[in-house]
Image (cartoon, rainbow, N blue to C red; front, top):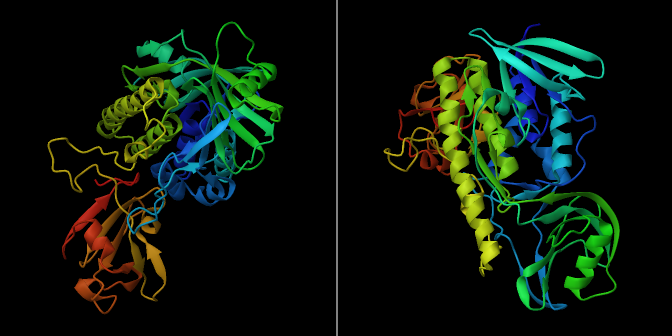
Length: 476
């Protein structure tokens, strides 16, 4: 079968895109030059909008089962606990936002969940296989792959570079990666087991004379590991001995012992945005297109949103539609980079609210609307959820209707057209309609009744309104 899309890079971005294409029955190959899967937490914060994407892709139950809510952090200074803080205040689910709170799951675990889902569609990651070059023409892309078995020439309709900040795809296209890297600042990040700490909490151990200097330990679900972060000073080795010294210094305790350093890396402030996200039949997504500071947990989530935006457009194949990928996602990436950078600056300046995360980090307010249009429910806005019941009285919700690779047409108290493979159509009846065939909808199987008017209210809908939802959950 001819390849529809070749994806370089099997991190969260590449895996999300591969799942979205594979569930549409498209032939996809996903390669990664690494011979072993990444084993570490790295991007461990999953934002509410990403949870909605995972709901659609069929991986949310596994993500929720393996992950955990954000922990309360105990703040110490000079060896004494001074307060407890939360990164964000927990919120109750609502009719339109079923997953209002960030979720914590190590990146390697998230990737494993996504790989398992991809395998259910008969597609496996080709590890130890590197994209080393490509050429494109009007009809497709010819790529060269290299592995221990030798080199291979592959022909695909499209190529997507989800191959990280050092993306060979971006470099071969000659696309500028605008931004800065601050070599004067270094942080040691990674995963560690610590004896003597209650794993049910996070910790900030600050220096006695400087509350901005110290070590942070965030509990990771599924074991006894904490994700840690601490500044590196001087020419020291980034190893367990160095980390134990920092922990002793900042905690002021002698009973805390590092038992295992599972994964570590040296991080430098790196903020970059690709000048372009697309070149004819070749696209950039995730870290290949934008690199974020870790503050606010935006990088992994923004890459997943890239893939979710791009998948249905690649499946459609329309040049005009594919052109909207760059226009929609680059503006979002630029905005999110601004949020991450501002949060990082708050940390550096020691702002009292530097630990707080507001709605701007949850990505629920991402919109692709024309800025000149009104702010409420216009083209490009996220489509809200709402509770419904079917003709038999069983509970359902709008997200159930949206789930899958199709677009969804909501007909509010009016007759829906016949559904197609690409667009599913439903009648949404008013709570007081009294029967499943009111409003002219004579097919009860495609009629659902609004509960307490939530759907009509969320969509600001009146009887007779028809609202089309894109496959990625935004208003068309």
